Image (cartoon, rainbow over all chains, first blue to last red; front, side, top):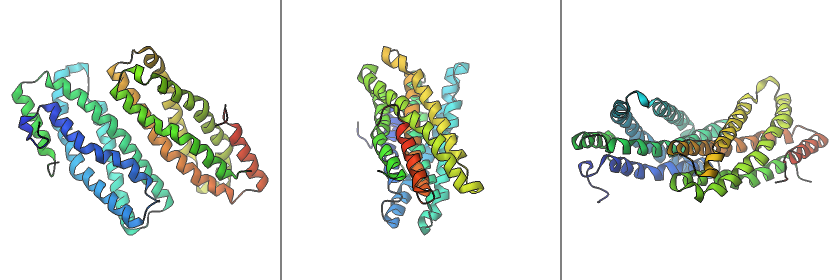
Length: 171
Length: 163
């Protein structure tokens, strides 16, 4: 299938896999970014940080909100009382907290006033975010496969569209 | 003879390939049957239990009290001790998955949990070791040569098998 095909032409798991595949290079860039905090020129690091920060805020955050708003309630409805999405919602809260902490470091990165202690804090946030994304996205794909077999075609299309529309700019 | 920061850095350099292997292992857990990674899991588990855990304990016993003494009330090593507790807890969780991995009875939910543990351990260790080296550089300028040598020896002796 064409990578650029609109969501209506893709199944729900395909839509999510497609989004996750676009996110993955950015997620994989986070440890490398952490390792360059004090090993490359300050302006070069600031530029790379800004690129990844914008991707996270403009693309990943809306995706998280759309998944939690549209997909998790459907999963909980289907799984009735046998399974709660609470741990996954909890991970979303933790991811959003880490993203906010990245935002807190931004001004210091731009002004070149990131001291040793803050550099360590930033490294910790970047590695933690990477480790959470890697597992969380894979687990989400497992859950979406559950939905695929349990919803009508119309319901699946509606969910796939809601995910696509979540992005501030289509990824 | 190596200085204290050099001793610590050398240990960390020897640990880093194993730490990076945890993330690689996590991906193998996602991709294949347990047969494909059981031997590597066992090798890395042995490493974290026999090499890493004693190192963590020795650092906490020998180095952190010296750092707290030097920094008096201005800085506590409590956050680093807290991370040590997390590291030990994660190592304990790895142990829970050992038998299911060895016997090939790891469920999909177990595999997700194991991946989460491996990535979490990788993320904590990558940052924790670097931070420890920063702290140890502080000791270098503030202890007598005898004190520094004693600490460096204590670190070397911490390993169940020399790294």
